[in-house]
Image 1 (cartoon, rainbow, N blue to C red):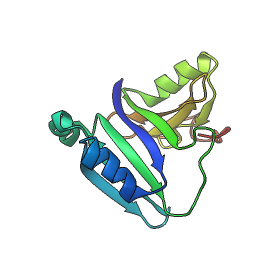
Image 2 (image 1 turned 90 degrees about the horizontal axis):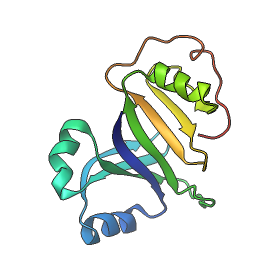
Image 3 (image 1 turned 30 degrees about the vertical axis):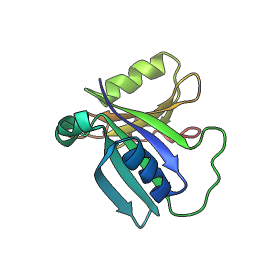
Image 4 (image 1 turned 60 degrees about the horizontal axis):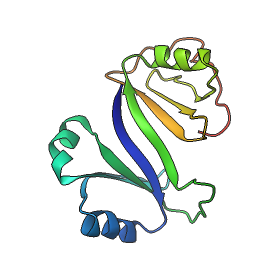
Length: 146
């Protein structure tokens, strides 16, 4: 398993970039505007992690700016922790066998979401190409929030 990023939702992207980049010293390494989803993702890395970020896309902070106004409560502005795993199906099975609910199953063989006992969302991503769709994951519905 390898740590990737931490996602934080922000209400004012310019103010957040000023804080994280101008004041804190992180550097923007990539940006994605998603018109269909109405959001912008901005990935930041610490100066000493720029090479690693370019090569591995980690360790990073992901700022998520939703274009539509939303009030974040109950920690919703903190998004998730993300980890790459060698076999997403085996990782999800191990978690499920341990009593963890798979909130967003890896139907695509690539991505899943679970929650910690404290309600922290954890994103799991397949290391390398997505695995071929397989049961029970391919037909498993989302459960709860992820």
